[in-house]
Image 1 (cartoon, rainbow over the protein chains, first blue to last red):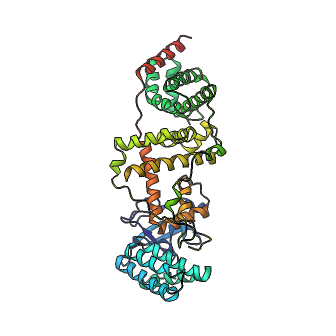
Image 2 (image 1 turned 60 degrees about the vertical axis):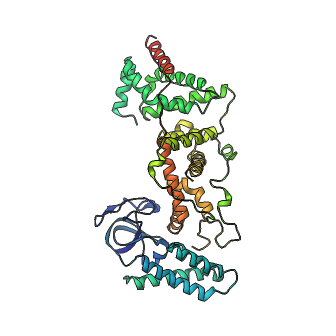
Length: 166
Length: 205
Length: 82
């Protein structure tokens, strides 16, 4: 199946430092307990893993669905999604900033998050901006609001990156 | 598991091969001395411990079964010898979890994090800075910073850190040699590494 | 993330060793990595920890003091003669 992976600059795994080959299958052995296994995102998971490079990945073998990711016994990078680059990432943050400002901008106790997101945007800290927007939503509307904000983030990415599933 | 090379070394020692002994001493001796030093009151006593340990190794050659590596076996003799000597000197080493909690604080100073009433409680108030230049970390001066940080550690932490990160023993080997649970060992390792990282952060500023 | 799933940075720095040892529970491993995905402070901290471990491994092994080497040779020769 096709899924997505965010990697650090140079096609490197952000936690393992593993240098991903292009096109070649990478075996991860079993997928026991999330320790091993090739990790990848469904479209709805993307907001949690925002990184520098976005890749389309093909997964095979045993595929386990976790709350915020997939784990597969083998996977390979198919192609890089070059559209995910600083300008688009900034547009993404602009969108969640507008949404947060609109929903919560004047509410004391929550409006400070708007200034935070503006700062994170200026620092190009995209993942942190997305987290802050979800945190702000949760602060005002509880866990359901958090999930709704994350779903909006995923929807924006799905639409603007023209991803297949949602 | 002992390799065939290690069994060959054992055979050579049993046959009285002095060159084999010299080579093994050159390879392991400095590390053994470094480790022994954490158990006892002086460098001179540490040297005595190392002598005693090697005698224990030679006397125990016939008993070596090869279930662990030769190095692990030798270091187990070393740590047992050092511990006994330390006890004779009135030094008991607090390896227990309870004792390990004492005398050391959190991994990072609490004021580095945002307070509970902030929008991001517990998040970095002042982020750590990336250490640029990997070569700098391997420079003599930096290694001295690490050595000094290790010397300042409580002995139990220093011993675990030395065995794991200086000497490269794995978790199971250290737990076996020191008779620690995996959790015990990990707590000591965590505190030790955190302290060394703090010292390096201070230095790299 | 949702507050019930969050690991704030102050907790993350206490879990780093367990993470590197692969001794965190599967759930905590996920929470740890989810946090690192957006928190560059903690990513940097993990990097520093890895660098610390690597540098500690480079701490030089001195040679033995010559008198100790001599004494050890004596120990060997005495033992040989037993």
